[in-house]
Length: 355
Length: 217
Image (cartoon, rainbow over all chains, first blue to last red):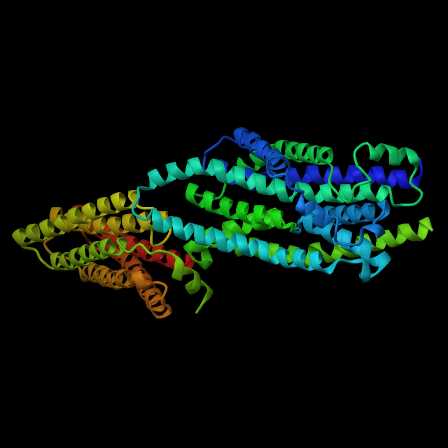
Protein backbone atom coordinates (compact mmCIF):
# COMPACT_ATOMS: atom_id res chain seq x y z
CA UNK A 1 0.00 0.00 0.00
CA UNK A 2 1.63 3.27 -1.07
CA UNK A 3 1.48 6.58 0.81
CA UNK A 4 -1.08 8.05 -1.57
CA UNK A 5 -3.47 5.16 -0.92
CA UNK A 6 -3.06 5.70 2.82
CA UNK A 7 -3.72 9.44 2.36
CA UNK A 8 -6.90 8.73 0.38
CA UNK A 9 -8.27 6.22 2.91
CA UNK A 10 -7.36 8.48 5.86
CA UNK A 11 -9.02 11.48 4.18
CA UNK A 12 -12.26 9.59 3.53
CA UNK A 13 -12.37 8.21 7.08
CA UNK A 14 -11.62 11.65 8.54
CA UNK A 15 -14.29 13.29 6.39
CA UNK A 16 -16.85 10.74 7.61
CA UNK A 17 -15.77 11.37 11.21
CA UNK A 18 -16.32 15.12 10.61
CA UNK A 19 -19.80 14.34 9.26
CA UNK A 20 -20.62 12.19 12.27
CA UNK A 21 -19.32 14.76 14.77
CA UNK A 22 -21.23 17.47 12.95
CA UNK A 23 -24.48 15.58 13.45
CA UNK A 24 -23.56 14.86 17.05
CA UNK A 25 -22.72 18.46 17.92
CA UNK A 26 -25.69 19.94 16.11
CA UNK A 27 -28.27 17.55 17.60
CA UNK A 28 -28.86 20.13 20.34
CA UNK A 29 -29.55 22.89 17.80
CA UNK A 30 -32.08 20.76 15.99
CA UNK A 31 -34.14 19.53 18.91
CA UNK A 32 -33.57 21.75 21.95
CA UNK A 33 -36.52 24.11 21.39
CA UNK A 34 -39.06 21.40 20.63
CA UNK A 35 -38.04 19.59 23.83
CA UNK A 36 -37.99 22.83 25.84
CA UNK A 37 -41.59 23.55 24.90
CA UNK A 38 -42.53 19.93 25.77
CA UNK A 39 -43.99 19.35 22.31
CA UNK A 40 -41.99 16.13 22.01
CA UNK A 41 -40.12 13.87 24.38
CA UNK A 42 -36.32 13.86 23.86
CA UNK A 43 -36.41 10.41 22.23
CA UNK A 44 -39.24 11.40 19.85
CA UNK A 45 -37.38 14.62 18.98
CA UNK A 46 -34.12 12.82 18.17
CA UNK A 47 -35.90 10.36 15.86
CA UNK A 48 -37.88 13.22 14.28
CA UNK A 49 -34.66 15.22 13.64
CA UNK A 50 -32.75 12.25 12.20
CA UNK A 51 -35.63 11.47 9.86
CA UNK A 52 -35.86 15.04 8.50
CA UNK A 53 -32.09 15.33 8.27
CA UNK A 54 -32.11 12.43 5.84
CA UNK A 55 -35.18 13.82 4.06
CA UNK A 56 -32.97 16.72 2.87
CA UNK A 57 -31.37 14.21 0.50
CA UNK A 58 -34.75 13.06 -0.85
CA UNK A 59 -35.92 16.65 -1.34
CA UNK A 60 -32.74 17.88 -3.05
CA UNK A 61 -32.02 14.91 -5.28
CA UNK A 62 -35.27 13.06 -5.84
CA UNK A 63 -37.94 15.76 -5.58
CA UNK A 64 -36.10 18.83 -6.90
CA UNK A 65 -33.47 16.92 -8.93
CA UNK A 66 -30.84 19.49 -7.92
CA UNK A 67 -27.12 19.22 -7.20
CA UNK A 68 -25.71 19.72 -3.70
CA UNK A 69 -24.75 23.33 -4.30
CA UNK A 70 -22.90 23.71 -0.98
CA UNK A 71 -20.83 20.62 -1.78
CA UNK A 72 -19.93 22.07 -5.17
CA UNK A 73 -18.82 25.32 -3.52
CA UNK A 74 -16.66 23.46 -0.98
CA UNK A 75 -14.97 21.69 -3.90
CA UNK A 76 -14.56 24.90 -5.84
CA UNK A 77 -12.48 27.13 -3.52
CA UNK A 78 -9.42 26.34 -5.65
CA UNK A 79 -8.64 25.03 -9.18
CA UNK A 80 -9.56 21.36 -9.22
CA UNK A 81 -6.39 20.41 -11.12
CA UNK A 82 -4.24 21.41 -8.09
CA UNK A 83 -6.27 19.32 -5.69
CA UNK A 84 -4.51 16.15 -4.56
CA UNK A 85 -5.29 13.59 -1.86
CA UNK A 86 -2.51 15.21 0.23
CA UNK A 87 -4.16 18.61 -0.05
CA UNK A 88 -7.49 17.20 1.17
CA UNK A 89 -5.76 15.28 3.98
CA UNK A 90 -3.91 18.46 5.04
CA UNK A 91 -7.18 20.41 5.05
CA UNK A 92 -8.99 17.80 7.15
CA UNK A 93 -6.10 17.22 9.58
CA UNK A 94 -5.53 20.99 9.99
CA UNK A 95 -9.22 21.50 10.73
CA UNK A 96 -9.34 18.50 13.08
CA UNK A 97 -6.29 19.66 15.07
CA UNK A 98 -7.73 23.11 15.59
CA UNK A 99 -11.21 21.82 16.45
CA UNK A 100 -9.62 19.47 19.04
CA UNK A 101 -7.50 22.28 20.56
CA UNK A 102 -10.46 24.67 20.75
CA UNK A 103 -12.83 22.07 22.18
CA UNK A 104 -10.27 21.03 24.81
CA UNK A 105 -9.79 24.65 25.88
CA UNK A 106 -13.47 25.50 25.77
CA UNK A 107 -13.07 28.00 22.95
CA UNK A 108 -15.99 28.57 20.57
CA UNK A 109 -15.51 27.02 17.17
CA UNK A 110 -17.37 26.23 13.98
CA UNK A 111 -16.27 22.97 12.33
CA UNK A 112 -17.65 24.26 9.02
CA UNK A 113 -15.41 27.32 9.14
CA UNK A 114 -12.42 25.20 10.15
CA UNK A 115 -12.91 23.00 7.06
CA UNK A 116 -13.24 26.06 4.80
CA UNK A 117 -10.03 27.54 6.27
CA UNK A 118 -8.28 24.18 5.88
CA UNK A 119 -9.04 23.83 2.17
CA UNK A 120 -8.12 27.43 1.34
CA UNK A 121 -4.83 27.22 3.29
CA UNK A 122 -3.78 23.84 1.86
CA UNK A 123 -4.34 25.04 -1.73
CA UNK A 124 -2.87 28.51 -1.23
CA UNK A 125 0.41 27.68 0.58
CA UNK A 126 1.55 25.16 -2.03
CA UNK A 127 0.13 26.56 -5.27
CA UNK A 128 -0.07 30.30 -4.59
CA UNK A 129 -3.06 32.61 -4.44
CA UNK A 130 -3.62 32.44 -8.22
CA UNK A 131 -5.29 29.00 -7.88
CA UNK A 132 -7.84 30.30 -5.40
CA UNK A 133 -11.33 31.15 -6.66
CA UNK A 134 -11.93 34.47 -4.98
CA UNK A 135 -15.66 34.80 -5.77
CA UNK A 136 -16.88 31.76 -3.75
CA UNK A 137 -14.32 32.51 -1.02
CA UNK A 138 -15.46 36.11 -0.61
CA UNK A 139 -19.15 35.15 -0.68
CA UNK A 140 -18.53 32.41 1.91
CA UNK A 141 -16.54 34.76 4.16
CA UNK A 142 -19.25 37.43 3.86
CA UNK A 143 -21.97 34.96 4.81
CA UNK A 144 -20.06 33.87 7.90
CA UNK A 145 -21.03 37.29 9.26
CA UNK A 146 -24.27 37.68 7.32
CA UNK A 147 -25.97 34.36 8.15
CA UNK A 148 -26.32 34.98 11.92
CA UNK A 149 -27.45 38.54 11.15
CA UNK A 150 -30.07 37.31 8.66
CA UNK A 151 -31.22 34.75 11.27
CA UNK A 152 -31.36 37.54 13.86
CA UNK A 153 -33.46 39.94 11.79
CA UNK A 154 -35.76 37.19 10.48
CA UNK A 155 -36.32 35.86 14.01
CA UNK A 156 -36.96 39.35 15.36
CA UNK A 157 -39.42 40.42 12.66
CA UNK A 158 -41.26 37.08 12.67
CA UNK A 159 -41.76 37.40 16.43
CA UNK A 160 -42.99 41.01 15.98
CA UNK A 161 -45.48 39.89 13.31
CA UNK A 162 -46.82 37.02 15.45
CA UNK A 163 -47.11 39.32 18.48
CA UNK A 164 -49.22 41.72 16.39
CA UNK A 165 -51.42 38.98 14.90
CA UNK A 166 -52.07 37.20 18.22
CA UNK A 167 -52.06 40.29 20.44
CA UNK A 168 -55.60 39.69 21.73
CA UNK A 169 -55.65 35.90 21.64
CA UNK A 170 -55.55 33.78 24.79
CA UNK A 171 -52.01 32.63 25.48
CA UNK A 172 -53.00 28.99 25.85
CA UNK A 173 -54.65 29.07 22.43
CA UNK A 174 -51.53 30.64 20.86
CA UNK A 175 -49.32 28.06 22.59
CA UNK A 176 -51.52 25.27 21.24
CA UNK A 177 -51.28 26.59 17.65
CA UNK A 178 -47.52 27.03 17.78
CA UNK A 179 -46.91 23.68 19.46
CA UNK A 180 -48.38 22.12 16.32
CA UNK A 181 -46.43 24.48 14.05
CA UNK A 182 -43.20 23.63 15.87
CA UNK A 183 -43.31 20.15 14.35
CA UNK A 184 -42.92 21.84 10.96
CA UNK A 185 -40.32 24.40 12.01
CA UNK A 186 -38.13 21.69 13.59
CA UNK A 187 -38.53 19.57 10.45
CA UNK A 188 -37.65 22.59 8.26
CA UNK A 189 -34.62 23.37 10.42
CA UNK A 190 -33.40 19.77 10.13
CA UNK A 191 -33.89 19.86 6.35
CA UNK A 192 -31.95 23.17 6.31
CA UNK A 193 -29.19 21.64 8.42
CA UNK A 194 -29.11 18.57 6.21
CA UNK A 195 -28.97 20.62 3.03
CA UNK A 196 -26.09 22.81 4.26
CA UNK A 197 -23.97 20.71 6.61
CA UNK A 198 -23.92 17.22 5.06
CA UNK A 199 -22.89 18.53 1.59
CA UNK A 200 -19.82 20.26 3.08
CA UNK A 201 -17.96 16.99 3.72
CA UNK A 202 -19.69 15.44 0.70
CA UNK A 203 -18.06 18.05 -1.54
CA UNK A 204 -14.66 17.44 0.05
CA UNK A 205 -14.88 13.65 -0.44
CA UNK A 206 -16.15 14.07 -4.01
CA UNK A 207 -13.30 16.37 -4.99
CA UNK A 208 -10.91 13.90 -3.38
CA UNK A 209 -12.45 11.12 -5.50
CA UNK A 210 -12.03 13.28 -8.60
CA UNK A 211 -8.40 13.97 -7.68
CA UNK A 212 -7.67 10.22 -7.55
CA UNK A 213 -7.94 10.14 -11.36
CA UNK A 214 -5.81 13.24 -11.97
CA UNK A 215 -3.05 12.71 -9.39
CA UNK A 216 0.07 10.90 -10.54
CA UNK A 217 1.12 7.85 -8.55
CA UNK A 218 -2.30 6.61 -7.46
CA UNK A 219 -2.41 2.84 -7.72
CA UNK A 220 -4.64 1.30 -10.41
CA UNK A 221 -6.43 -0.72 -7.70
CA UNK A 222 -7.39 2.45 -5.86
CA UNK A 223 -8.53 4.07 -9.12
CA UNK A 224 -10.63 1.01 -9.89
CA UNK A 225 -12.10 1.00 -6.37
CA UNK A 226 -13.00 4.70 -6.44
CA UNK A 227 -14.25 4.22 -10.01
CA UNK A 228 -17.00 2.00 -8.60
CA UNK A 229 -18.51 5.06 -6.97
CA UNK A 230 -17.27 8.03 -9.02
CA UNK A 231 -17.65 8.34 -12.79
CA UNK A 232 -14.39 10.03 -13.88
CA UNK A 233 -15.62 10.49 -17.44
CA UNK A 234 -18.14 13.08 -16.19
CA UNK A 235 -17.30 16.58 -14.96
CA UNK A 236 -17.13 17.14 -11.17
CA UNK A 237 -20.18 15.76 -9.39
CA UNK A 238 -21.24 14.37 -6.03
CA UNK A 239 -22.26 10.70 -6.45
CA UNK A 240 -25.65 9.84 -4.94
CA UNK A 241 -24.20 6.83 -3.12
CA UNK A 242 -21.72 9.14 -1.35
CA UNK A 243 -24.56 11.53 -0.46
CA UNK A 244 -26.66 8.70 1.00
CA UNK A 245 -23.72 7.47 3.12
CA UNK A 246 -23.03 11.01 4.39
CA UNK A 247 -26.69 11.53 5.32
CA UNK A 248 -26.85 8.20 7.12
CA UNK A 249 -23.68 9.03 9.08
CA UNK A 250 -24.99 12.50 9.97
CA UNK A 251 -28.36 11.08 11.09
CA UNK A 252 -26.51 8.52 13.21
CA UNK A 253 -24.50 11.39 14.71
CA UNK A 254 -27.74 13.10 15.72
CA UNK A 255 -29.15 9.88 17.19
CA UNK A 256 -26.02 9.35 19.29
CA UNK A 257 -25.43 13.05 20.08
CA UNK A 258 -29.06 13.33 21.15
CA UNK A 259 -28.32 11.15 24.19
CA UNK A 260 -25.89 13.78 25.46
CA UNK A 261 -28.49 16.46 24.80
CA UNK A 262 -30.93 14.63 27.06
CA UNK A 263 -28.29 14.56 29.80
CA UNK A 264 -27.65 18.30 29.46
CA UNK A 265 -31.36 18.96 29.50
CA UNK A 266 -31.68 17.24 32.87
CA UNK A 267 -30.34 20.46 34.39
CA UNK A 268 -33.18 22.48 32.88
CA UNK A 269 -33.43 24.41 29.68
CA UNK A 270 -33.71 28.12 29.08
CA UNK A 271 -37.35 29.14 29.13
CA UNK A 272 -38.79 29.38 25.63
CA UNK A 273 -42.40 29.70 24.50
CA UNK A 274 -43.77 27.77 21.49
CA UNK A 275 -44.21 30.98 19.46
CA UNK A 276 -40.60 31.94 20.14
CA UNK A 277 -39.32 28.45 19.40
CA UNK A 278 -41.19 28.49 16.11
CA UNK A 279 -39.93 31.98 15.14
CA UNK A 280 -36.28 31.14 15.93
CA UNK A 281 -36.40 27.80 14.14
CA UNK A 282 -38.25 29.16 11.15
CA UNK A 283 -35.72 32.01 10.85
CA UNK A 284 -32.83 29.52 11.08
CA UNK A 285 -34.44 27.12 8.62
CA UNK A 286 -35.18 29.85 6.06
CA UNK A 287 -31.61 31.15 6.21
CA UNK A 288 -30.13 27.66 5.95
CA UNK A 289 -32.33 26.50 3.09
CA UNK A 290 -31.84 29.76 1.13
CA UNK A 291 -28.04 29.69 1.55
CA UNK A 292 -27.98 25.97 0.68
CA UNK A 293 -29.70 26.58 -2.65
CA UNK A 294 -27.39 29.53 -3.30
CA UNK A 295 -24.49 27.15 -2.63
CA UNK A 296 -23.14 29.11 0.34
CA UNK A 297 -21.74 27.07 3.24
CA UNK A 298 -22.71 28.67 6.58
CA UNK A 299 -22.51 27.70 10.23
CA UNK A 300 -25.87 26.24 11.32
CA UNK A 301 -25.07 26.87 14.99
CA UNK A 302 -24.43 30.56 14.32
CA UNK A 303 -27.56 30.85 12.19
CA UNK A 304 -29.92 29.39 14.81
CA UNK A 305 -28.18 31.40 17.54
CA UNK A 306 -28.87 34.52 15.45
CA UNK A 307 -32.55 33.48 15.29
CA UNK A 308 -32.75 32.97 19.06
CA UNK A 309 -31.08 36.34 19.73
CA UNK A 310 -33.49 38.03 17.28
CA UNK A 311 -36.52 36.58 19.06
CA UNK A 312 -35.08 37.64 22.43
CA UNK A 313 -34.56 41.20 21.17
CA UNK A 314 -38.33 41.78 21.35
CA UNK A 315 -37.85 41.89 25.16
CA UNK A 316 -35.13 44.53 24.86
CA UNK A 317 -31.43 44.57 24.05
CA UNK A 318 -30.43 43.88 27.67
CA UNK A 319 -32.48 40.70 27.85
CA UNK A 320 -30.21 39.02 25.28
CA UNK A 321 -27.32 36.91 26.50
CA UNK A 322 -24.62 38.86 24.65
CA UNK A 323 -21.95 36.46 25.93
CA UNK A 324 -23.16 33.99 23.28
CA UNK A 325 -22.97 36.65 20.58
CA UNK A 326 -19.42 37.51 21.70
CA UNK A 327 -18.45 33.83 21.46
CA UNK A 328 -19.68 33.80 17.86
CA UNK A 329 -17.57 36.83 16.95
CA UNK A 330 -14.58 35.27 18.72
CA UNK A 331 -15.05 32.05 16.72
CA UNK A 332 -15.00 34.07 13.48
CA UNK A 333 -11.56 35.33 14.43
CA UNK A 334 -10.35 31.95 15.67
CA UNK A 335 -11.79 29.47 13.23
CA UNK A 336 -10.71 30.34 9.72
CA UNK A 337 -7.16 31.80 9.97
CA UNK A 338 -5.63 29.16 12.25
CA UNK A 339 -6.74 26.02 10.33
CA UNK A 340 -5.78 27.90 7.16
CA UNK A 341 -2.18 28.20 8.39
CA UNK A 342 -2.01 24.68 9.93
CA UNK A 343 -3.39 23.01 6.79
CA UNK A 344 -1.20 25.15 4.53
CA UNK A 345 1.95 24.19 6.43
CA UNK A 346 0.93 20.52 6.49
CA UNK A 347 0.43 20.47 2.73
CA UNK A 348 3.82 22.19 2.28
CA UNK A 349 5.39 19.43 4.39
CA UNK A 350 3.67 16.71 2.39
CA UNK A 351 4.93 18.27 -0.83
CA UNK A 352 8.49 18.52 0.49
CA UNK A 353 8.53 14.85 1.47
CA UNK A 354 6.78 13.55 -1.60
CA UNK A 355 9.06 15.31 -4.11
CA UNK B 1 -31.24 56.47 18.28
CA UNK B 2 -29.93 53.67 20.50
CA UNK B 3 -29.90 50.03 19.37
CA UNK B 4 -32.66 49.21 21.84
CA UNK B 5 -34.87 52.09 20.63
CA UNK B 6 -34.38 50.89 17.04
CA UNK B 7 -35.61 47.36 17.81
CA UNK B 8 -38.34 48.47 20.22
CA UNK B 9 -39.76 50.72 17.47
CA UNK B 10 -40.97 47.57 15.67
CA UNK B 11 -42.21 45.66 18.72
CA UNK B 12 -45.97 46.04 19.32
CA UNK B 13 -46.74 47.52 22.73
CA UNK B 14 -49.33 46.36 25.22
CA UNK B 15 -50.49 49.27 27.35
CA UNK B 16 -53.56 47.81 29.07
CA UNK B 17 -51.61 46.83 32.19
CA UNK B 18 -50.43 50.35 33.08
CA UNK B 19 -53.88 51.72 34.09
CA UNK B 20 -54.28 48.67 36.35
CA UNK B 21 -50.96 49.39 38.07
CA UNK B 22 -52.01 53.01 38.51
CA UNK B 23 -55.31 51.87 40.08
CA UNK B 24 -53.39 49.65 42.52
CA UNK B 25 -50.98 52.48 43.36
CA UNK B 26 -53.94 54.82 43.99
CA UNK B 27 -55.50 52.35 46.43
CA UNK B 28 -52.14 51.95 48.20
CA UNK B 29 -51.67 55.71 48.47
CA UNK B 30 -55.20 56.22 49.77
CA UNK B 31 -54.91 53.36 52.29
CA UNK B 32 -51.58 54.69 53.57
CA UNK B 33 -53.06 58.17 54.09
CA UNK B 34 -56.02 56.68 55.96
CA UNK B 35 -53.62 54.64 58.09
CA UNK B 36 -51.71 57.80 58.99
CA UNK B 37 -55.00 59.40 60.07
CA UNK B 38 -55.93 56.27 62.00
CA UNK B 39 -52.76 56.12 64.08
CA UNK B 40 -53.40 59.62 65.41
CA UNK B 41 -56.97 58.86 66.51
CA UNK B 42 -58.29 57.14 69.63
CA UNK B 43 -62.03 57.58 69.12
CA UNK B 44 -63.42 54.12 68.49
CA UNK B 45 -66.09 55.19 65.99
CA UNK B 46 -63.60 57.16 63.92
CA UNK B 47 -61.17 54.25 64.01
CA UNK B 48 -63.85 51.84 62.81
CA UNK B 49 -64.85 54.16 59.94
CA UNK B 50 -61.23 54.54 58.81
CA UNK B 51 -60.66 50.80 59.07
CA UNK B 52 -63.70 50.21 56.84
CA UNK B 53 -62.32 52.59 54.22
CA UNK B 54 -58.94 50.85 54.26
CA UNK B 55 -60.66 47.47 53.95
CA UNK B 56 -62.57 48.79 50.94
CA UNK B 57 -59.24 49.79 49.34
CA UNK B 58 -57.83 46.33 50.05
CA UNK B 59 -60.86 44.61 48.45
CA UNK B 60 -60.73 46.91 45.42
CA UNK B 61 -57.00 46.03 45.12
CA UNK B 62 -57.89 42.32 45.13
CA UNK B 63 -60.30 42.90 42.25
CA UNK B 64 -57.58 44.73 40.29
CA UNK B 65 -55.26 41.76 40.86
CA UNK B 66 -57.95 39.46 39.54
CA UNK B 67 -58.24 41.66 36.42
CA UNK B 68 -54.45 41.34 35.99
CA UNK B 69 -54.73 37.55 35.92
CA UNK B 70 -57.54 37.51 33.36
CA UNK B 71 -55.79 40.12 31.16
CA UNK B 72 -52.55 38.14 31.31
CA UNK B 73 -54.40 34.98 30.37
CA UNK B 74 -55.90 36.66 27.31
CA UNK B 75 -52.78 38.09 25.73
CA UNK B 76 -49.37 37.01 24.47
CA UNK B 77 -48.11 40.56 24.66
CA UNK B 78 -46.85 42.06 27.92
CA UNK B 79 -45.04 45.38 28.57
CA UNK B 80 -42.16 43.49 30.16
CA UNK B 81 -41.51 39.85 31.04
CA UNK B 82 -44.76 37.98 31.75
CA UNK B 83 -43.56 36.77 35.18
CA UNK B 84 -42.54 40.30 36.16
CA UNK B 85 -45.98 41.65 35.21
CA UNK B 86 -47.84 39.47 37.69
CA UNK B 87 -45.09 39.46 40.32
CA UNK B 88 -45.17 43.26 40.45
CA UNK B 89 -48.98 43.24 40.70
CA UNK B 90 -48.82 40.62 43.48
CA UNK B 91 -46.19 42.57 45.40
CA UNK B 92 -48.28 45.73 45.21
CA UNK B 93 -51.25 43.72 46.45
CA UNK B 94 -49.15 42.44 49.37
CA UNK B 95 -48.25 46.04 50.26
CA UNK B 96 -51.97 46.85 50.32
CA UNK B 97 -52.66 43.75 52.46
CA UNK B 98 -50.01 44.85 54.96
CA UNK B 99 -51.61 48.29 55.22
CA UNK B 100 -54.90 46.55 55.96
CA UNK B 101 -53.18 44.34 58.58
CA UNK B 102 -51.74 47.47 60.23
CA UNK B 103 -55.20 49.07 60.34
CA UNK B 104 -56.58 45.90 61.87
CA UNK B 105 -53.94 45.93 64.62
CA UNK B 106 -54.57 49.60 65.40
CA UNK B 107 -58.29 48.95 65.71
CA UNK B 108 -58.26 45.67 67.62
CA UNK B 109 -55.48 46.51 70.10
CA UNK B 110 -57.41 49.56 71.32
CA UNK B 111 -54.49 51.90 72.03
CA UNK B 112 -55.13 54.74 74.45
CA UNK B 113 -52.05 56.55 73.17
CA UNK B 114 -49.49 55.88 70.47
CA UNK B 115 -45.77 56.75 70.67
CA UNK B 116 -44.29 59.31 68.30
CA UNK B 117 -41.96 56.63 66.90
CA UNK B 118 -44.92 54.63 65.62
CA UNK B 119 -46.58 57.73 64.15
CA UNK B 120 -43.31 58.54 62.36
CA UNK B 121 -43.11 55.00 60.99
CA UNK B 122 -46.67 55.30 59.64
CA UNK B 123 -45.86 58.69 58.13
CA UNK B 124 -42.80 57.15 56.46
CA UNK B 125 -45.01 54.40 55.02
CA UNK B 126 -47.26 57.11 53.58
CA UNK B 127 -44.22 58.81 51.97
CA UNK B 128 -43.14 55.44 50.50
CA UNK B 129 -46.65 54.97 49.05
CA UNK B 130 -46.47 58.46 47.50
CA UNK B 131 -43.08 57.66 45.94
CA UNK B 132 -44.49 54.38 44.61
CA UNK B 133 -47.46 56.18 43.09
CA UNK B 134 -45.10 58.53 41.19
CA UNK B 135 -42.99 55.57 40.04
CA UNK B 136 -46.02 53.67 38.74
CA UNK B 137 -47.23 56.72 36.79
CA UNK B 138 -43.84 56.82 35.01
CA UNK B 139 -43.71 53.05 34.43
CA UNK B 140 -45.11 53.34 30.89
CA UNK B 141 -42.17 55.58 29.92
CA UNK B 142 -39.54 53.34 31.49
CA UNK B 143 -37.54 53.41 28.20
CA UNK B 144 -37.10 57.17 28.47
CA UNK B 145 -33.72 57.95 30.06
CA UNK B 146 -35.01 60.92 32.09
CA UNK B 147 -37.99 58.98 33.49
CA UNK B 148 -35.75 56.00 34.12
CA UNK B 149 -33.44 58.16 36.21
CA UNK B 150 -36.37 59.60 38.15
CA UNK B 151 -37.78 56.11 38.82
CA UNK B 152 -34.40 54.98 40.14
CA UNK B 153 -34.20 58.06 42.39
CA UNK B 154 -37.64 57.35 43.85
CA UNK B 155 -36.77 53.67 44.36
CA UNK B 156 -33.70 54.80 46.28
CA UNK B 157 -35.98 57.09 48.31
CA UNK B 158 -38.16 54.11 49.27
CA UNK B 159 -35.03 52.20 50.27
CA UNK B 160 -33.96 55.08 52.52
CA UNK B 161 -37.44 55.16 54.10
CA UNK B 162 -37.18 51.44 54.77
CA UNK B 163 -33.78 51.95 56.45
CA UNK B 164 -35.25 54.74 58.60
CA UNK B 165 -38.12 52.50 59.71
CA UNK B 166 -35.65 49.69 60.42
CA UNK B 167 -33.81 52.03 62.76
CA UNK B 168 -37.04 53.14 64.40
CA UNK B 169 -38.14 49.53 64.79
CA UNK B 170 -34.87 48.57 66.49
CA UNK B 171 -34.85 51.49 68.89
CA UNK B 172 -38.56 51.06 69.68
CA UNK B 173 -38.10 47.38 70.56
CA UNK B 174 -35.21 48.39 72.80
CA UNK B 175 -37.40 51.05 74.45
CA UNK B 176 -40.28 48.59 74.84
CA UNK B 177 -38.20 46.14 76.83
CA UNK B 178 -36.17 48.66 78.80
CA UNK B 179 -39.08 50.76 80.08
CA UNK B 180 -41.73 49.87 82.56
CA UNK B 181 -44.59 48.69 80.32
CA UNK B 182 -47.21 46.17 81.36
CA UNK B 183 -47.09 42.80 79.62
CA UNK B 184 -50.31 43.58 77.72
CA UNK B 185 -48.90 46.89 76.51
CA UNK B 186 -45.68 45.21 75.39
CA UNK B 187 -47.64 42.65 73.34
CA UNK B 188 -49.93 45.30 71.81
CA UNK B 189 -47.12 47.68 70.91
CA UNK B 190 -44.85 44.88 69.69
CA UNK B 191 -47.66 43.74 67.36
CA UNK B 192 -48.04 47.22 65.93
CA UNK B 193 -44.35 47.99 65.44
CA UNK B 194 -43.88 44.59 63.84
CA UNK B 195 -46.70 45.05 61.32
CA UNK B 196 -45.48 48.56 60.45
CA UNK B 197 -42.00 47.15 59.86
CA UNK B 198 -43.46 44.42 57.61
CA UNK B 199 -45.50 47.00 55.70
CA UNK B 200 -42.38 49.09 55.06
CA UNK B 201 -40.54 45.99 53.86
CA UNK B 202 -43.30 45.21 51.39
CA UNK B 203 -42.96 48.74 49.93
CA UNK B 204 -39.24 48.09 49.46
CA UNK B 205 -39.90 44.74 47.76
CA UNK B 206 -42.09 46.52 45.21
CA UNK B 207 -39.37 49.09 44.48
CA UNK B 208 -36.74 46.33 44.23
CA UNK B 209 -38.93 44.52 41.70
CA UNK B 210 -39.26 47.69 39.63
CA UNK B 211 -35.48 48.11 39.68
CA UNK B 212 -35.01 44.55 38.48
CA UNK B 213 -37.48 45.17 35.63
CA UNK B 214 -35.54 48.30 34.61
CA UNK B 215 -32.25 46.42 34.68
CA UNK B 216 -33.58 43.92 32.12
CA UNK B 217 -34.69 46.55 29.60
